[in-house]
Image 1 (cartoon, one colour):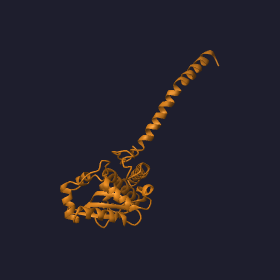
Image 2: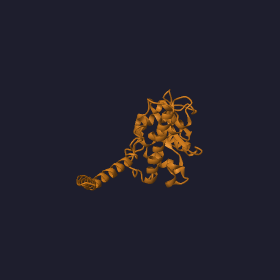
Image 3: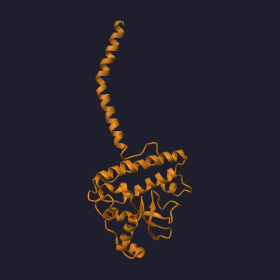
Image 4: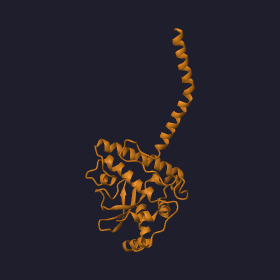
Length: 242
């Protein structure tokens, strides 16, 4: 090796030793940021994104324990989101809202299951509130006209969720005639899909899969349902009506 090559190699090696720590630190920060974003968004190439929660995992300590919140949101909901994007890409379906997708005929099982899981959880998280909420006089009157009374409405909603065999959801929906119904669906189906007995616009959805409550309530689904009704944002439920 001649003197010129020796000096050049020495300078490059020295420079590399000087910048390597900062480059490594930058890379670590980048990976950390990427990992954090994976908690709140789906793949950047996907059609749909995991919506950010408006509250923390510890927002409902008396109703939903933080670990259940974290697993439910960052694992289950995120999993549905990512798998939905993959299924839509494979089916060459794009430029549709999630509602339009779910109303399609003959949904492939991957889109039906993961699209339902995506939409259902979006609604579930959105209608919960740490502050609690009271029904407006207008909404109470609508409830009374459809179900007899507020108490009868809440009892029927809790009862249908408790009686859902296996995994599924309890819903309040509004049909094309603007009448409200309380219904239940299995798995990740919802009333937007043509496979359900009654179709309508979901204005409230309660997850009764075991992953939504089992760490805190074990097999006491009724207790979970009674507690979840205490943290519903009734203003948002009402706002979803036509």
